[in-house]
Image (cartoon, rainbow, N blue to C red; front, side, top):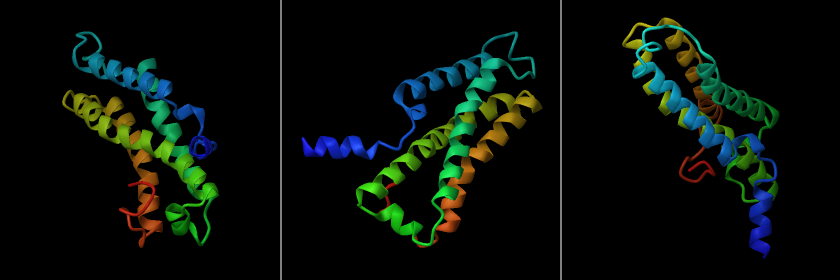
Length: 159
């Protein structure tokens, strides 16, 4: 019973925005956008930003902004210790940071496919939107990489 309570407390600071229902719905929207950009004969020729495209890009952009906000909010000299700590308070903070980073990491992989679908037809509006959102999603990883130069990745909570 104690372990269950500790496990529930680990997720206390994680936003419900990053739950499984939202995640799977977002993946379906991204798949829909990719299919319409590659298979649909009408939309694959157009270089337009549709509602589906905006919906597919919104969750990763919000997740990246949330991750950057959390990194700035908990900016303190002992931040590398925070990522390696086993105290319940620090584990909650790390779990709250891991959730948006997971969305960003998945999107960076999916963006490769979206970018290739748009760039091979020279659809610069789509390429620009995907590229900007990908750079924004990659920025929290860069902040962690450059502000924690001594962080052993294999020992951190992100491994």
